[in-house]
Image (cartoon, rainbow over all chains, first blue to last red; front, side):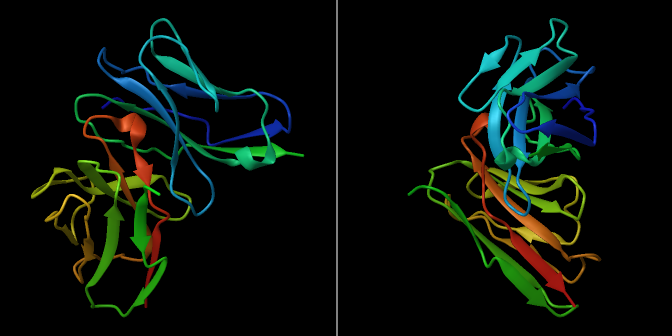
Length: 109
Length: 113
């Protein structure tokens, strides 16, 4: 499974969009990009995933670059409850979720 | 309600004792996983099972053992051979090969004194 690189932390003002980047330059053709988040001392929660196309659901949007080497998770209107560690994961044939250290998003009032 | 349950939430053990962490799911998921999380760190995969009576080592399996006798249950035993057992342990399950639907339990915080 390809490795991912994320900034260790980011701040965002409440009500503004939070844009969380992820680099996955070694991603291969059959690997998906998954995003999970973990609120302090809880189990991670699935947010969204994609292969090539941009995706949107009720929680977030996922923008994947045309070359698939990077992606951005967008929370359109961040709230204080969105403060969490966000994990970008790339997985394919091994069917395993391998977590890195993620990005700690701090939403400020 | 369907879900994945870990028990207990907090567990204390003396050094040198084996301890078993429970994980039960009623989601009818084939795949189950055990992760370990240390303070300020991401999750590291200990063991995973894709089907009953079968399991594979993850990245940090040494000092741990698992069994998968039933689809619903995937208990993890932390043995005395695990050198640093104090950690937050998370269990997850998913439909086999469908990682977008991985559900996590609320975790067990194990402290060995």
